Image (cartoon, rainbow, N blue to C red; front, side):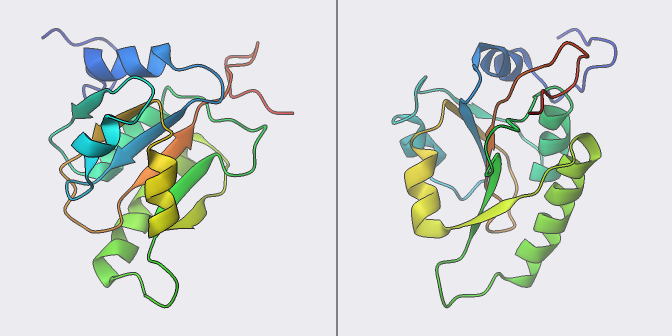
Length: 157
């Protein structure tokens, strides 16, 4: 495997192929190791399931360093939260803070919480699945791809 300059090594050829193949409006599921990724991937557009053997925050950082987000929709970044009446475990709060910081490093966007049951339904509408080895629960996100503008940054209305 040869490394490229200024490109995070977590962005493997398989991951880069998925990101480059996605079009404006396509969604990408990035999930933890407990998520039923193999089953969900069979329902996605490409049926692709890539595993990256590291925790979720560095994967989010790497992907967000190259993936434009869709500023033409409100919920461009969605993350899983417990169903109504249940609370996020403390370790999930920790990982949420880390993946939020990773996203905000590359984008000035907000994140939307989606209850677990609804999140599973949304995940099956994604383009592909990238599964991490993250063990903290509720470390699951959906990113909606936007457009790279003429200035090389995320295109905003």
